[in-house]
Length: 189
Image (cartoon, rainbow, N blue to C red; front, side, top):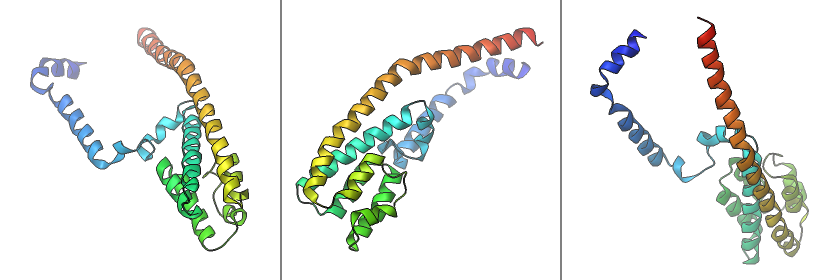
């Protein structure tokens, strides 16, 4: 308490340190390149928010499916199209999985055999099945065009759920913590 009293008396000398520090952190974050992508190791804690991880995963899968069908419609070679679509999502697991998948396809393996070497985390199950079973490019494009809106609607549903329940959960957590701290400071001493 004495330390806080001393700090309060000298606040006129050091108050500007916190805004300057905050600006330096924002500048460093911007220069690091992590500001350009939502999905990076610095945002991994955000995925622990209820429904946030699966919502982001659905939006990434929708973007991947829609972009891959667009690329395949414009006659981009299958391995290159898969790699480009995954790079656009920014999902490290999907990017790594598509690299292995594309390399196997370029070596001449069938899509089903190529998908066996890819981690299960890389793709959601339906997207994984379409990529591994589609031997004809036209059937893959048609399936991906139908799958993209499905994943997007799932993401929208989870987003609506997040808008409703997250404020309630945060209110309970913050209010409960404040009440607990107040109760402990009142009754423990």
